[in-house]
Length: 576
Image 1: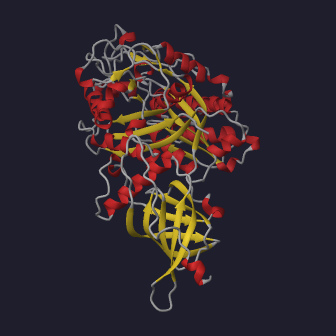
Image 2: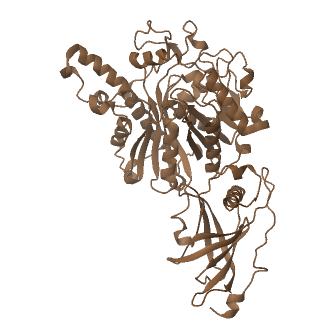
Image 3: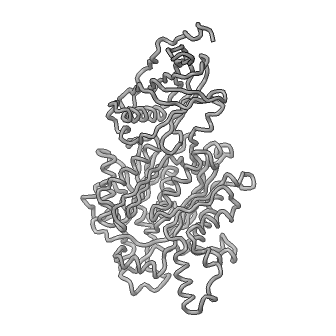
């Protein structure tokens, strides 16, 4: 390269750009530092440092001369080795710098092009966190408290940038088996009508128990989905999950004969899996010996029976994973499935949660812990989330499966996109076996992590689907978390507790909530919190009471705060 080329400048060595302003951030963040950079251009790696970075560009130092005009992409990655966002830029100057004898060093000026509002927020938040890591006070904005310090920078040319960029996740199909309606349309109607799925238990004789209520799925016919042989191989929990997956695949219009099934996977969450089957077979063995047991009992009781059977149903060879983290199992499954797509491992994932815990032994264990509502004479008035007279949840059952799909993959096949999965967060209280930490600190952190993962701020959330378990302690804690996160906006954000209708189906609840949020975005109707009569002053939220509410929302949050495991999920209106 000629000396004239080396001396070419664009105004000044420190690149200056106009101040960018957002509703929630009033700072222009510029950071001077020496951060190692992975520099890969034209198929070769180079040593590099990032000396200066701002929302307008970066000043890099490398031992390789990169010609002025070269198009590069600077990408920021956080603790999951995923790139939040990539910034296209152009080398606008190059200059030789002082270096030890025998070493050539060059300073490069990289100007970013067309940084969007969301990308700008991510970049500014990252710079703030990098500033903290360098013990520099850069900004007092909220974002600086949300990001972990594990940040890396990758600079590549366009040819290999797609290997690093985090892919978007489209939600293109939904299937559901629930006490208030099955199938996407049936479930939607149940939500909008405020239908209660709670009644007296019919599955077994519950007269010995203080609680005699359940939210049962009463219209489920497995023969609509499965052959008699397959039905004999599956617990009710697995039947629910496979049926929901079949619905979701049909809703998404997926044709697996046209897809690479090695790039399609399954991730299902369940708290107890086939435990009901195990107790049932134990009773059969007690009466007739082991030869009277179902020969499929061993595999039917495995927690991973659901994901395995779904994979077999469609011939899926990508992944078949099971997540079991209690009531938050489906929430963790959604986050895990999204990451499989975001990092490019899979193109499509069938993901959800399923549960069928309505067995006398399981039910008796819940009653022994005093964990269930005892409003036996008025089943349609319970559970009552956030109501001052609430007395606990009602055990339920069901399943929900969604189709998560790589955004470009969905667009290429012309799929309908209900919403975009934006981000998630997960924490653990490590406080008690049976109770959540009343401070709500870790639950709050899960919401913060979800916002960070989604590159959003609290002001972006305009609807909350609450965990709303209908115990005094848990509802108080959740209200405390919501108020801590959203401050003065708390009373302006609608909150629904759909568990008031569906009951408490453990892992399936997370799937019901996420489907409910996708429907709210698509249809503009917020599900009600039924049985809400007496306001609890400690739960001073904008509860959607008793009847559905029409509203246009863009971004919805789901909370799953169950017995110490906390998951928060964010979905957003699909913007192509």
